[in-house]
Length: 126
Image (spheres, rainbow, N blue to C red):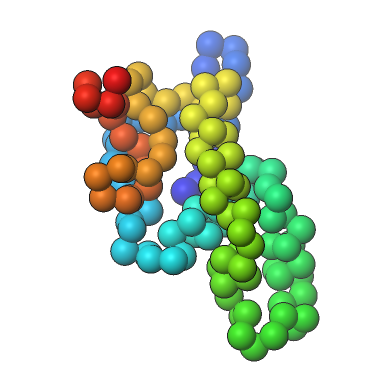
């Protein structure tokens, strides 16, 4: 995920998603790292997170972490609040004041197979 700011009709948005973006962004085959990967990419793209300090500390001083935790994703997985943070990221990504999203689409997990991306709202979802 890399966002590019866009000015549309005199208003600035963090990014404009198009129909070309519809589909899987993060495949569920990432296993336990699926959510940490999304969180890290969101932080890298301007999302203000509960984990900002931890990520910054890891990036600037990885030597303070034990051998067991040399991957920031493993550190994030230690926190019970990771799922609540993911809910906040989904809300942030679906904020139409920040992002332009194609009509009748949402950003989140596909309930059928667990991938994360941009999805068309199906009639049976309504």
